[in-house]
Length: 495
Image (cartoon, rainbow, N blue to C red; front, side):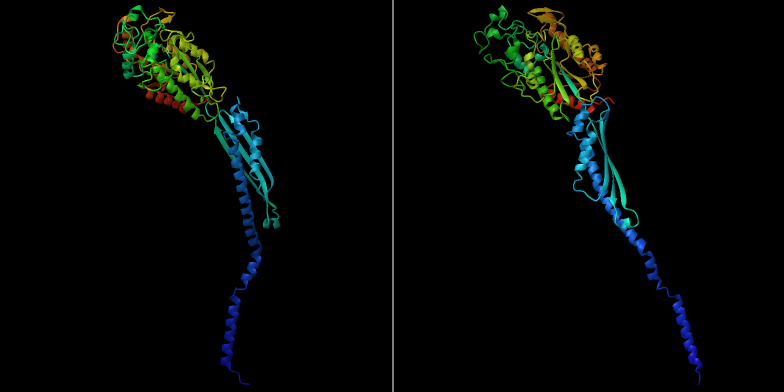
């Protein structure tokens, strides 16, 4: 047999090539490696699924905790009601139970967990109410359970807080002395002169000041002999009391009105005390609308002449009817009825007696709270006045003391401020008396002389940043609202 050496060599080289290719071919390892890695890969995917489920359930539990902690410090919640009445710091009674029940109520349709343990606390510290709701739970696993991990533990916490509003008492000291019966504007002063015959022999041009004390029906004999003004009834002398006439705009057939909120009407001539009374009514409405919690603000009216009079003591009912005599709103609307006519023994008569009024207010404010609760309110005194201090006294037609007006004694204010009482002053500028006379020991001249000194004295009386002035009736109303807002915005509770 003939051997083809060349052919054999070619086949040998081909075999060697095949062996070499086989030797370096790794494609079969993929299957081997995949088989080895399959179990951990499946486990990893399973872990992702299990952890995603746990995260979803935790989100639902966290949402319930957030809602529960917020609910516990909401204004209308039972824990907040309890907290506002607490006089000391510590746990709020019933707060933890309320928050826990709220938390559970939000999970009635949520499943997929076990061993849920909520923990809640509601505490008061100073003026801050804090609610914390925490939870722990287990979420059963699926794939991870094969590896021995039966549950995934989850936990969360939510904290909410609320700072209690400041409780404030407003003591309104309202000057109703004779000078506050002055017309509210120069134009109203001119109108009063034209229709007021009181003290006619002394003030033939019409009376606007120091002419409001004649007893009704007891005009001087010299005035009785004067011709009656045009349109007046035969017994016009009974209207010599300037206050009565001033309230009727010259129509002698009218009866005195009880409120004159607008200047320049035909019904009456607006006095400064009218403008103040209307402004007080607007203040009451503003305070009622801005309360954050019930009974947050108390307001009382304390007019004064010779004495400070508790005309309408502190009340939380600020939205009564101005036609209901039992409400503070009615009292404000009828403030002008208290102007000095020498008939109210609660107020006395004659002059303007800060030396009595301010010490009396100091006694009325028996304690100074920190504003943290309705039982511990912050006291604010609103002094509304034209600023003259006059020591004269009148009763039953008898006069005593000096009628030369001066400015307020600021040491009287210092006594209150040293106790932590804030004094806000609204100065209703004293209008220069037109056509002054030198009668009655030059009373008109003495008043006109001190007018430039009144603002400085009242500013010294006021607490820092609480001095205000307003000339017109509209400005009096707006400024009183500004005073209230400044108190609300700056009052801070002692921690």
